[in-house]
Image (cartoon, rainbow, N blue to C red; front, side):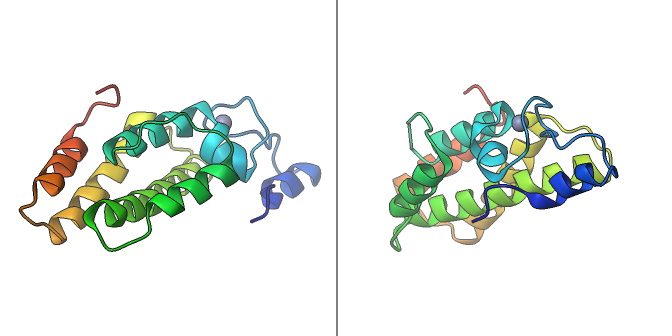
Amino acid sequence: MKQRLKIRHKLKKWGCIDFDTCVFCNSNVEDIEHLFFNCSFSRVVFQKVMKNCLINREMESWRREVSWFSKKAIGKNILARLRRIALACTVYNIWKARNWMIFCNEVLTVEDVYRWIRQEVLMKMYMRRCNSSLFLRLYQNWQSCSLSD
Ligand SMILES: [Zn+2]
């Protein structure tokens, strides 16, 4: 995966845009690692997603997280499936939020992005619902609206 999102960097060089800083925190140059993991904005989202998926751990670098999370998401059991869904939804929605903020001038909060992820994950879980206690516990985790729970 390319570390630098070249497009904005080039646009800045050509004078089309004034900044190539991250739209979420406005304090770092936007690259993949920053956008998804090092950014304080994404970090809050990811920590909550990981907690909802029963993962309690501090995040390190992007590459390590992805490979670690992927290993925890192998298999057909409910937890592995949920982690795959949650990881995909999180990456997709952070990217979507970034694009909305850049191209539509929308101002989005961490709560907004978490709400999008939560809705998608709950919908996908509901489609695969079952009566196991693990499923019910995970479903309950995801029903929580607050980022600080
Ligand atoms: Zn940032």
